[in-house]
Image (tube, rainbow, N blue to C red; front, side, top):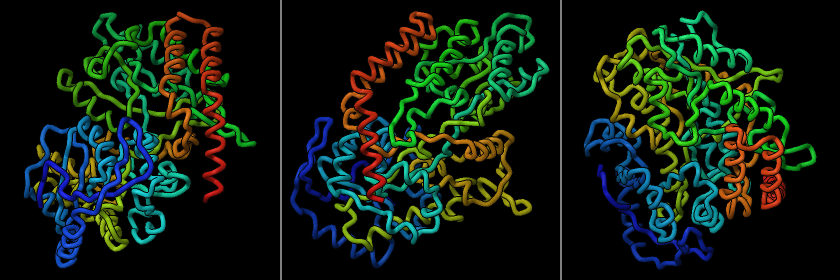
Length: 510
């Protein structure tokens, strides 16, 4: 086992297509090919040498020869060569890696890089293996939700193995103790939610006799379309019966959702500085007892409660996702992954080698290693009590988590033994599972629009600016609609048409 600073395997793979972002996909020779074959031959006689690079944003990656990695290597019969990089360095490295043709055995692609031209060109240029035909050989990889695989397809084919996350995990995180102080129930409708925010703002929910709280803390980096499903709007795009693509902002339902946001702003139920605060201030607002509600992912709730209890041991949080509003229950689905692994033909030269690499990820999702990543080492991090894993107090899962976060495909708890969870931990599992019944998907996740790739970010600025200005009262409904028309004329209509054609092409190839 080795943790290394650079990619150990340097195999060149020539491309004729060019990448953007200032990088060309360079044709290269076959230097190192004999050494590569020698490595693989020796691997057949013992543990399979597997090189992996990934982003790691913790303080320090675990030291070499730690017990967790030894167990992973033993179960998977691998000799791991690891290159953990900070997130920024990792993302900067990816286009350079693709351009140079120097790859590890699996390349993790961040979610937002899925449609970046350097990735698209590489996939279409034959740099990576199509893995769809092999998935039925692997029981754990093949049990991943089909929709998640479809969300990361290219031209209707499967190239990646996703790092699975709940598909609908956005939640309203709220001060449950405040709600109890006010004698109120968790809201089920938009109207009840509005009443809760008013009470959090004006009815002294913390019972300190001061006017020092407000309903919900927002920042501009959050998805402004979070309320849209409750009003019946599409999840960014929807496909009509005749195959046309309709953008959410062009619908009356979406406008109704931003009218609701403006109401919260006008009534002082949300923070006025939402356009300028950063994440630390945003989180601090709920942890310090200023705001009663925050919109975030379900896995954030436990950390927020822990942070709040450092100064107020009685602070208690809970969460919910869906607010009814005269429509059927609806929540927006996300991609269901935190990026995905692609498998380069330059470093994985044969089908036999590909099966070994895929086998590693399948084994990592098996019961034995899922127990390791979810609960740690038995006797050190947990004990088995009545057939369930029970955490040993004051033990840290930082080391297992350092491997599970960047490398696990299925969430470890999916295949791990049953265990004793905290109230919020169990609620997170139950809530995200329940949300799956009511998901509304974005049909463009696996589609490509050249216009969007070229100028989508600039066009989104038009909509985001108008959205903020409308909430703050700087423009009215007429101004909002004018901004939508500007978006359409400057490229939005063209994007819709390109998605329509890409959708038809993908369907024809399946």
